[in-house]
Every structure is written in C-alpha cells, then in structure tokens.
Length: 456
Ligand code: SAH
Ligand code: SF4
Ligand code: F3S
Image 1: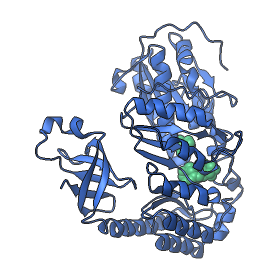
Image 2 (image 1 turned 90 degrees about the horizontal axis):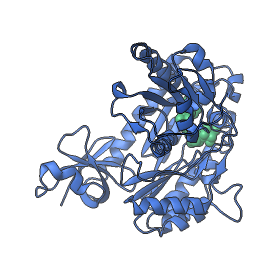
Image 3 (image 1 turned 60 degrees about the vertical axis):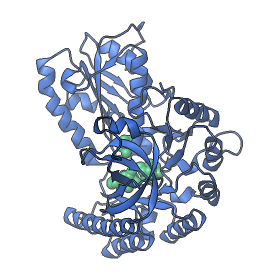
C-alpha cells in the first residue's frame, strides 16, 4: 500500500544503490539517483557510510534472486547495529516477489517495483524515522524518464531508454511479467534527451529496450527503429550510436540499411539466437527458425561490412536432446558470433515453460554450457587474431581496471582494447587527458576477450 505523499523537504540522508541485472537496471539506477538528487538526497561511496541501502534487483534466473536474498541476509547485522538504517529492494525482483520479501527478510523496509522509481524520494521520506514496511509495486505506475543528465556514471557514454516492457512472452522469460507491457517513447522525447546528453559532453549513446527492433509500435505515423536512428544520427556531438537488444523476429532490412548508411550508428548487433534447434525455438515461442537467423546474419554482413554479432543462448531448455543441442553448436560454429552470453535454463514461476518438465539434469546443463562457452572462446580468439596489425578507432573510457597504468577503450564493434598511454602524457593525468577522446590504435595482440593496442 502506498500512502499519500507528504510535503517533501530536503533530506540529509545518504543513499547507496547497488545494481544487479541488465543495462535497463543500470539506467533505472541513474534515473533514481536523478530523482533523489532533486529532492536533496546525497550519496555514499560505501555502504557502511549510508543511511539508506537500496538493491536494484534482477529476477531473470533463480541465481539472480538468490544473490539478492543472500545480500539481504548479510545486511541484517548492519541493520541490528543501526536500526535507523533504511533497507530497500527495487526493480524486477521487488515486482516479482512483492511482500514475500518482507516475510523472508523482515528487516527490509521498502519493496519498490519497476514502475515506482520516480516516487522513491517520497517513499523513503515516509519510512524515515518510522522503520515501517512500505510496498510499492503498482502495475500502472507511470515511469518518469525525466533524467538529470549530469547524474551519470560516465560523462562520455550514456544509456537511453527508447522503450520499456516486453510483449513477446518467450516461454522461459519473466521479463514481461516484471516489466509490464511494451511501450515506446516518442521520437521527440528521445531526441530531446540525446541533445541534452550531447550538450553535457556525451559522445556515445546506447539505445535500450528488450526488443528495440519493434520500437515504434503504438506510436503515431510510421515510426521504426530505422527512422529513429535517422533522427539521432545528425545530432552534433554524438559520435557513436548502439542499440540493444535486437529480436530476430523483428529485424528488418530497413534497420540494417540504416546501420550501414548512417556514419554514427555502430557496426554491432546484439541479436540473441537462444537455440539452434527449430523444435526448441518453437517451444521457446521465439517465432523464428534457425535458418531465418542464419539469413539475417548473412543479410547484416552483406549490408554492413565488418558488422559484429553477439548472441545469447540458453542450454538445457525442457526437452532439449543431444541432437537439439548439436543444432545450437552448429549454429554458433557457422555464424561465428563475436561474443555470446550462455545461460543454463532456470525455471521461472508464472512463465509458460513452467508447464514443461525441467528434465535436462544439472550435470548435462553444465556440460552443454561448458561446450558452448569453449566454442565461443575459440571463435572469439580466432576472430580477434584477425585484427592483429589493423588500425582501429577507439573511444577511450579511462584506466584499465585489470592493468594498472594502461588505458582501456572500445571499438565501434564493441571490442575492448587495452593500450599504453603515449609517452608524452604524464602518468598522473593519463586518464583525464585521453578519456572520452576518439583515437586510433594498432592492434598488436589479443585474447578471446581483449585486444591489446599500441598508439602509432
Ligand atoms: N530482451 C532480450 C533479453 C532479456 S533477458 C532478448 O529478448 O534478447 C537476457 C537473456 O537471459 C535472454 O536473452 C536469455 O538468453 C536469458 N534468459 C532469460 N530467461 C531465462 C531463463 N529462465 N533461464 C535462463 N536464461 C534466461
Ligand atoms: Fe524475455 Fe523474450 Fe521479451 Fe527478451 S523478447 S525480454 S527473452 S520475453
Ligand atoms: Fe533486466 Fe533482470 Fe529485470 S535481466 S529486465 S534486471 S529481470
């Protein structure tokens, strides 16, 4: 139940938000930071220093929910030491579990679903000093996209939500239940936001949606992802545009032609195949065949030379036989994705696949997961070796986390490139001097996940 908003005053509470799950959640965290900042909340660098700890959560697999429950368990002692501490669960798992979270973890104060973020300041205000339970998971809550462009994790790139929700109901997937119906933002709203981001120094944007290829459904006029890309490409200051995720059933020639023609739109598609077996794809309710997926990859490569394709795969879906799995191996081996996320099927309550028996035993799931990972690793290693000696443009992101003293950036095709700063740049200022700039480096070495470059 949600009580009436009080008159909000500036809060002196310090908030710490930890984000789990996908890019949508990262963006929701940014939107929450924006709305809390407007109401005078500040942010703690460390959870031990916070008056409010919020976990923005994911429900996509059982493991993701376990992780959050175990974090909440370990926060119990912190709450005992400091009973004033406000603990909140936000996002997909909040929407999915609702007040079950209070039953299992009574020390949690707030459960705030995926459409309630803009009400966070007033919800926290209501809890402050009372230590009560507040549940806010209304399904018709309105999402407020009004972001403070300055409240971003990184100055040079930003996620921009172009749609929310999902109407596809793939049989294994919980997302439509926790994120609600598909809804596209208007072109004007998106263009305005991207212009503001560009004015604030942003050079690279990633358009986000569960299925960006169906962007425009429900909007007036003939609006598609392709027409949106054509509106965004000319915006001054925006050098690179990415979009994720592409659903094969809605991929069109028109979209690929826009990618090929527009200089700012990057040569990269995240287009999950999920399986290579038509029998399994049908049970998954994916609405395409593996032959269609192959045709799309071919079309993409002929229209956009050099385009890289990333995929997701689920292994061990109910009824997946060795033969079905071999079809998936064949698909990956033939299309040679640049990278893949590979998941073991995890039954989700409420989804259509729950009707099917989860009959692939854990050991087989693990084994198939391993085989596909190894194949992807081999392909990525070989493809990355083909880059040796080539000069590539990268957008510098900052210092490498794993390689002190070196910098890291990304190519237009989303390869991670680690390189040494030029000698003339002094070490202390390296990161600030080059971050956010586009430079050319020559690739000298690589692993499956990283390219190593030198500045020539
Ligand atoms: N909208 C995106 C994906 C969102 S979820 C798309 O359609 O491509 C991210 C990935 O998680 C999915 O692509 C799928 O591979 C995986 N996934 C979703 N539900 C799952 C489940 N129940 N078990 C295992 N993996 C799952
Ligand atoms: Fe889930 Fe399918 Fe929607 Fe992706 S398209 S979010 S996999 S239901
Ligand atoms: Fe994303 Fe997980 Fe929600 S994948 S949409 S955070 S269920």
